[in-house]
Length: 122
Image (tube, rainbow, N blue to C red; front, side, top):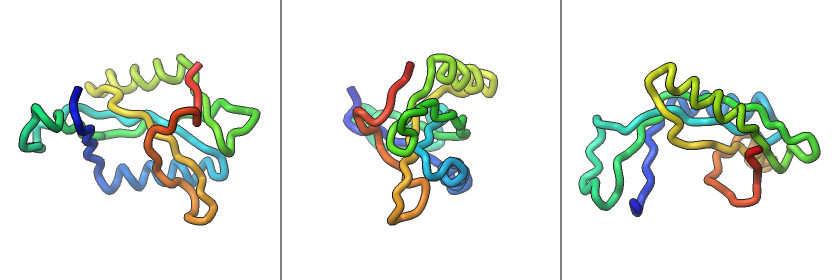
């Protein structure tokens, strides 16, 4: 197993991710990051750090949680299949999922890492 997981995201795409969070504020939202292995990035020792993944597109998903969408999220198997299909159509793959959690003190769309127990895939 690789010790590090690296994603390369352009400034424009990070802004699209923030807009997705702002559009769904004050609810949590989620999506799939579409991309591929980056051949343009030399990670030094690829055996230790793993191959960096280049994120090239966002596949926004709908938060299907109706009981507490402000602090939980849910996606369906169909949502995941749709993201995988969209990735394949562009010669990409799903490289990561995102959760945008509204943080009132810092404004909408604070990007977070995977947090166990925050959401579900059904």
